[in-house]
Every structure is written in structure tokens, then in C-alpha cells.
Image 1 (cartoon, helix red, strand yellow):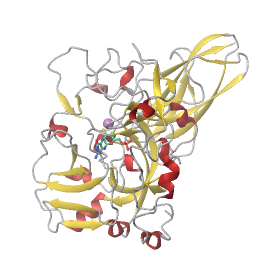
Image 2 (image 1 turned 90 degrees about the horizontal axis):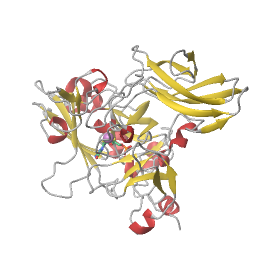
Image 3 (image 1 turned 120 degrees about the vertical axis):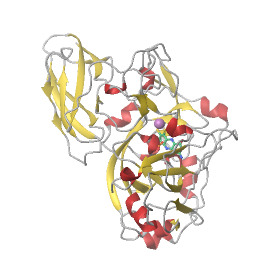
Amino acid sequence: MSERAMSERATPRFPSRRSLLKGLGIGALALSSAASFARRSLAETLAEETTRLPLPGGPDTRKLTTSFPEKGEMILQRTRPPLLETPFEVFDKGIFTPNDRFYVRWHWAVIPTDVDAAAFRLKLHGAVNTPLELSLPEILELPRIEMAAVNQCSGNSRGFFQPRVPGGEWGNGAMGNALWTGVRLKDLLDKAGVKPGAVQVRFTGLDNVLVPDAPRFVKSLDIDHARDGEVMIAYAMNGTQLPLLNGFPLRVVVPGWYSTYWIKSLEEIEVLDKPDDNFWMAKAYKIPDTPGANMKPGETGVPMVPISKMVPRSFLTNLTDGAEVAAGKPQPLRGIAFGGDCGVARIDISTDGGKSWQPAKLGADHGRYSFRGWQAEIALPKPGSYSVMVRCTNTDGLAQPMTPNWNGGGYMRNVVEETALTFA
Ligand SMILES: Nc1nc2c(c(=O)[nH]1)N[C@H]1C(S)=C(S)[C@@H](COP(=O)(O)O)O[C@H]1N2
Ligand SMILES: [Mo]
């Protein structure tokens, strides 16, 4: 029996939630972590098919895997802890990225492989009047919000950096868009009563380090950000419970910010009365404090700041690099875009290297943090090679740059994408 079939058949550990969820419109939210790991050997996992994903200097191909619980075919970057990339063609199929194709990234190898939903408690403590320990049913009873938002790794597209930089060598598939359902972090903080003098809120998940001296992966947000009414604790993704690998049973969603802050399998929220100086806040995930987080390779003395808001991006999804299309006929183009920390104002297309641009038609608006579809048509009368450029300008007036940024972390790439086409 396949792993998917096994996990679908497994008995939910928490059957009473069904009545609780009636009327919430989340029928499939089973609140059980029935995913199963390690049914295949590592060799089997590694011996699967490959896909083309050329990076400057190589490799040109990546392994595909279907061996991870609750996941369909994914690009295998690393087995343990799992780094799974969404194959790019998935983004052509819709504005929402299906849960079983949503990318996966964990820092440390000890990740939750089974969560007892009935015993699970979310703890909220620190600089609060009343520390809380909330069960999942208690959380499900709180006012519920829903929001479409892009989850993108800070290092999405890192593999395209030149010169290359160390880290997860992602193509463009370390991103995804989902409809998140959950509760406002603000409501939880208000329930506990934040004490005066609180400055930040720290999130810790169920994952842990393998070597005892390593710093657990924890991240913090400033108290005002945590209380903005948009930061949420999500228990559902695209209408069903979170896949275990994407943070079952609860994860932080920080709309418009890079996903490093979106702590998965959230177990603990701590209100801090001094700024968090742990490794992951003070040392890691720092970017040059320059426009576009850009610096020169080897440059020294560049002031660094924590990564935060996302920047606009756009992609052509119906044609891949090197595709052959018919000359003299209208050629439909379509794709996806997002504004970063605000909406998409416009998408423009160029077939002459950026000299002239034509506007694309925007698809349905699912909110400013969501992917937005776009469509256009080009007609190139003569056979030859052309490249199609797509540029997003967000509602703050920020447009994608024509030249790639560079920094040692491989963060925040958002150069205008170019797709080479042959018209024959
Ligand atoms: N608990 C926990 N949460 C985490 C991480 C982690 O290692 N542990 N990694 C973060 C990073 S860097 C990314 S890119 C996203 C990835 O989210 P996903 O796996 O659901 O796509 O999770 C974030 N939340
Ligand atoms: Mo990330």
C-alpha cells in the first residue's frame, strides 16, 4: 500500500473534533497527524526520477521523490532534515499551491513525525498577566480568520546566485500560496494580557536539535507587529489541516514577511521584555541594509539587518525556458505574481530586452498577500529567438529590478525573470 493510502486510512486520534468543526467549513480538518515516515529505505528514496533544473555551474538536474508523507512529487534537495522543492509546473495549475506539492524546509533533523493532537497544548507565557495552555479544541473555538498569503523562503532562488553561495540550492520553487485559517495572534496575546514593557514575542516549535549545543530554531517578532491583527496562528491550509511537514498542528503566518518567521509545529509563544538575542535572530538571516539587499561579493563593512518584508516577484508559468512556439501567431502567456508585503499593481511584459513593455491583464484578487494570476498575448511576426521578460510593480510602487541582487546569504532574489523562446 502506498504511503498516501496508509495515511488516509489511519484512524484519526482525535475523533471528537468532527462535531466541533461542523459549520466551520473545514470538514477535512482531522486534527490527527497520521503521516508515516521511514517506510522506504534511503536508497529507495534516492533512486527515483530526475527533473531539469539547471543552475549556473550545475547541477542541471534534480531528483524527484514521492517518498514523503502527505506529499506528492517533489524535488528532493535533502532528505534529513527534509528540504523539498515544489516542481515549477505546479505554479501553472492554479493560484493556490496544493498542500501535497507545497515546499518543505526544516533546519534541524529532529522534526515531529507524529503529534498527539488530543494531548497537544499551545503554551503562551513570559511577560503576560495570565499564562495560557490551550488545547486544539480551545483554539478552534476562538474567533477565526482566513487569509491568502504567500509563504516564501528567504533563500528561494538561491541556486541562481552568481557567484554561487552556500545554503539550500533552491530553484524558484521554495514558495507557495495558500489560504490560511486560524486565529489572530493578537487575540491570544490579549487573552493572556501582555504586560507593559513587553518588546518582542518569541516562537518555538516541536522540532529540536540533533547536537546538544546547537541553537534550537526560534524566531521573534516585535510586539507591535505580533499584535497587528494580521499575524496569525494557522491550523488549516487550503481548507484542511496542515501537513505534518508544513507544521501540523499549528504554525505562525506572518503575511508579507519571509517564511523564516513562520514557525511550524508551534508549541510555545513567549512574550519577552528584552530583545531576543538568540542565534537565529542576532546572527542568522541577516541581509545588507542596502536597497534590494544588494552588495558586492567580497565587500566588507556592510551594515546588516534582519531579513523582513518580501519584495515583488513575477513568473511566466505556461512556457519553459527554451520552448519552441509558432511565429506569426498570437502566443498566450500566463503566470503568477506577488507584491511582497503589499498587492500587485501591475504586470508588464517585454520581448525586446526591456526597451518597451506591454501591460498584462491581472487575474482575480485574493488579497494583497496572495499570488495573483496574470495573462498576456504576444505576437512575433518573424521566426527567431526572443526572450520574454515579466515585471511586477507592487502597490507601493516598487518594481522588480533588471539586474540580480547579490549577498552572501543568497536572500531576496527578485530580478525580472527572463524566458528564452524560439519562434519557428
Ligand atoms: N519549527 C520550525 N519552523 C520553521 C522552520 C524550522 O526549521 N522549524 N523553518 C522556517 C523556514 S526558514 C521556512 S522557509 C519555512 C518553510 O515552511 P514550509 O516548510 O511549510 O514550506 O518554515 C519556517 N518555519
Ligand atoms: Mo527559509
